Image (tube, rainbow, N blue to C red; front, side):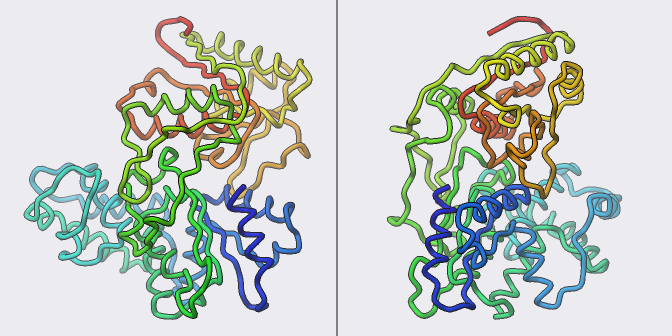
Length: 413
């Protein structure tokens, strides 16, 4: 909410009718939600604020720059990789390793030359010496050649091209740029934001960035802002007071990431010392079941109990991820449900129903109660990405958090 209030404040200060404030984030669903909240918060300022997600922003910039291609679909990308990797592979590398290197390093960093790859900082990736990188580079070059041949771009390639358009002067910069969920932006995305930020005419407050390394679920590589030309040292502040979740939920969620390095978004480590919530609530509960039917019955009973108390509406309760057998059990018990849709904001109290959505889909949203369904195989604490996803899901809950685990051995905890 701090970002939204700042966007409204800045929009109201604009004197030139051509000036605009940009609010952008990584996911489509969250950008739609932010736009709706801004319209409710300040209809007068909303017309001066453009809210969009990263990839739609990049697409708009590329189209204005004359691009007429398409973003490659998953099936076509799979076909390209089958073609590129059909022959003998470079010694010491398997197909998954090669693809990961392309998607997490080459693509997200906008690397377009062998020298750029040889000198790239690959923090968080397995070490590769210069000889190994030279061996892989022809594979990546061939994949990019086929992309170009078909006039296709990956999503990250789209961001890269958008940056080039802006740097060539092919897109008018905004008066103010505000970014939410900064931790999900890769290097090229950060460079695009830097390019869009006004630097001439001694502008005041041109850029505002808000992010949390604990919620990094889309990009596993931590990219310091300074590498994108964004200097925040001595100008940033870590907010330590939590207004959204209870102290009990905050502590439980942070425990999910115990032992996992969390970055501060600029090359350092996040320090949670002094973090606190402004209110307290019930302790989160964890229950394990070996029988799916019994688990579903427990989920229905827990949700029905919350509704029977008369303090929560069904729209204030969320089940994540969206699991078919839970939805069936809820509807069989007469409890309505509503599946959260991509590119659509949560309708709130205007439409009743327990919300159902993936852990990624509910990112940026909040509910008074959240029920998480986990498989025992997902409880492997070495699965760092899933631990971040669980952290995000848990912190969507304001007051009540229930975690139900499908396990091979029944028990409670």
